[in-house]
Amino acid sequence: MKDGDGNEVKAGDWIRFGFGIPPVGVQAPIVDRNGVLTVLTPKHKPKEATLALLEKCVGSYWKIPEPDIVSMMHAGIGVIHVTDKGPEFVPLEDFYKQLDDDTPTK
Image (tube, one colour):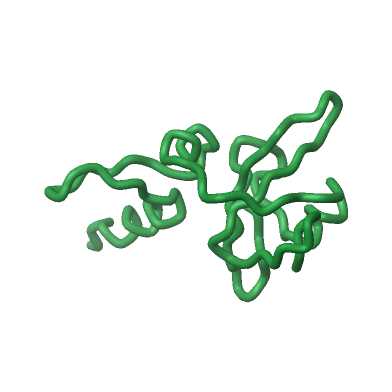
């Protein structure tokens, strides 16, 4: 799919769009969910939407450079995980997968 400026967007890209009255600006990542481009918006309703549905509902969106860690945390899509190598940003999806993987089994 292409953004409002004609730039191709894919999983891993970030987009910017606005919706509502008054308009609320949103920055969000695009992920691949079973072959479907999906936009993650955990601090908004709905918490995610397919890119096709988002385009239908809000009209144009624009590809942006990946935001800094603070912006990603503010958007509610990740956490800081401290390791022996220092702090690192972990997307929430990956963080929850790690929690599931670390769950002891009986």
